[in-house]
Image 1 (cartoon, one colour):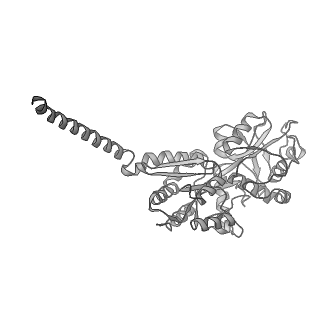
Image 2 (cartoon, one colour; image 1 turned 60 degrees about the horizontal axis):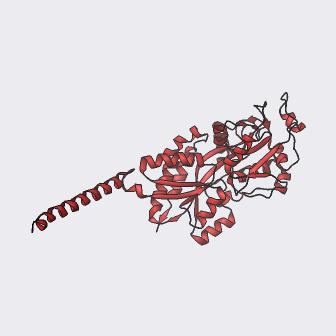
Image 3 (cartoon, rainbow, N blue to C red; image 1 turned 90 degrees about the vertical axis):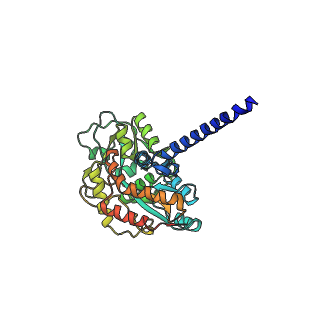
Length: 364
């Protein structure tokens, strides 16, 4: 009888202890980040061009709002394909979706919005000891990637760099191995400057190069190869060059001025592009897409890319509402983080128009 008298309070104590632990765990779970937002996880991926800024945004937004943005940088082609197939909530691309991709998406889930998120220079990086300053032109770059200029002391490079001791060394050009928006922007620029390049290679995320060009994965892959290989040359988003302390060439722009890949020169190119008509595909297919390559103006840098977020206009209520909230934050408050990573903040007009376009998202 005594055992049964004492067992009841002990059982009650155990139950009370378990209840307290469960309440505590629930409270801890609910207090991470900002309340219930901690349970929200948004899957995204695509362009490596925007990745340094996207990682910064993701960390800041998680700290401020408790929302997780899982961004995988595998190239613009990856972002487009996986948004169309609904494997990602949103993607990023530096090349607007073409007519075929747009129609495929429309058949799968409806219209896809393109929201410009940032602007950045595509820098021409090179590894040439003893040559800290180098000037190149679009025509010369085109002929390097066509295999027609193969030595650093070629007379055409020497003419652009009088007094510079260029070595009699082979040029090793590098390209992106995967479908890449950065490649799209780069080949668009070269096609504008060289009719031969336009005919033999053309504008593409995955061009068929006229000659064999070494391919590397992502901006990081090209950066690593150029850093390790004397005589090499490649094209990457500026932050990859800055972070790895690689030399970047100045390029002759449409006005014939040698311009470095700097924020002011990127903004000048974007402003000129905004004022130009958008009559050709893929830019004519989407309200806020435009080309910033070979832009007019004496101070404009000639290879400027725009990274777009792409998402279906029709969204599930969740995570759709959280996704739109994040993209509006990136467009507005998020622009304050751009300059420190080598990007140019969006012009105020684009921020306004991008926010208005996000307001057209509907929820199912």
